[in-house]
Image 1 (cartoon, rainbow, N blue to C red):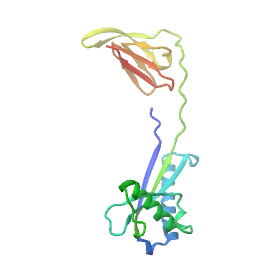
Image 2: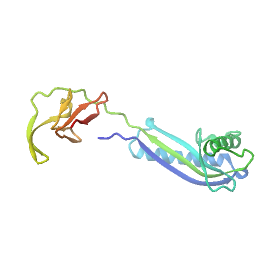
Image 3: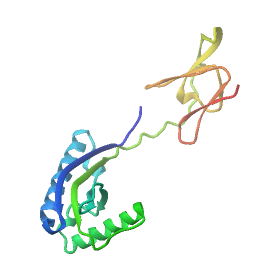
Image 4: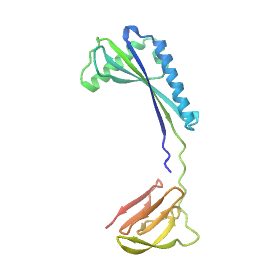
Length: 197
């Protein structure tokens, strides 16, 4: 079973020219996105201790059609002193990195607020290989029109390289190893199959 991390992206249109920017208002809007992101992660079973939320704002020079997404240090950064100068400099650096130039004296516009919630789940430790008490079952399995006597064994019974044909079973999957293939568990417990012929 896959143990995928969770990501939730939220946006809020926020068109402001730099002279109209109210940093406290932007921070309040980001705080609401932050709350929504945490609520969404909690709703997906992610404990608060395993949540984090990152924030950014889409910006452009006045009159441009395209924007760049500029990361923020937190939802409350826009309310801090000197935010406009700081974020405008950050935008100029991103513009230079992307397009090779910037116009530091040109006024900027804010277009969109972005908040992204990330949730992680604890990884399940892979059980160490063990030897089954009984030999694996053997079944007749057809590969390429021919019958092969094929062992059926549990994944946790694999303690060395296994030559196909074989069928490997576990709680969440069944893996068929055809003739001419080798199967083994790597150091992280992943099942690796190599074609040898």
